[in-house]
Image (cartoon, rainbow, N blue to C red):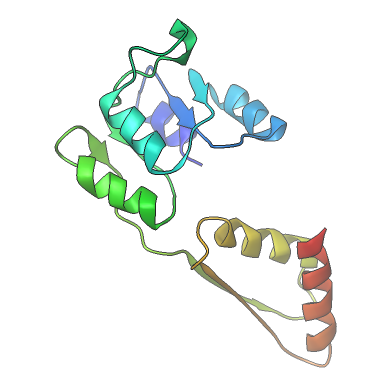
Length: 151
């Protein structure tokens, strides 16, 4: 989500933090040119990236202070970003809860709709992904999207 932006901006070092990275996330980071990937998330990741960690048990676990921190997060991430913004580093923005409204008819790909809804819902428990389905197949669309979300 943010690595390509950093690379286009000319950043020589790109650090990504994710609390529980899945293999596909690590692979995407590799393809995009991530320099270092740390298994840390939330406000703790913001603090680590803003201040740096130089006394980790192994050198590979040290995190250098970052110039700019970008990316999504919950209300605690937003609060942490507000504390470091302009003092320790730059940030992209102070985002609120994610919201998305998907309007679907029978031409919608229910797997894609489900992926869009989940992509917003995963940021925070107060995120609001909303689906509006209409037409003679509206109820079927909703069921298909719900089934795809469960898968």
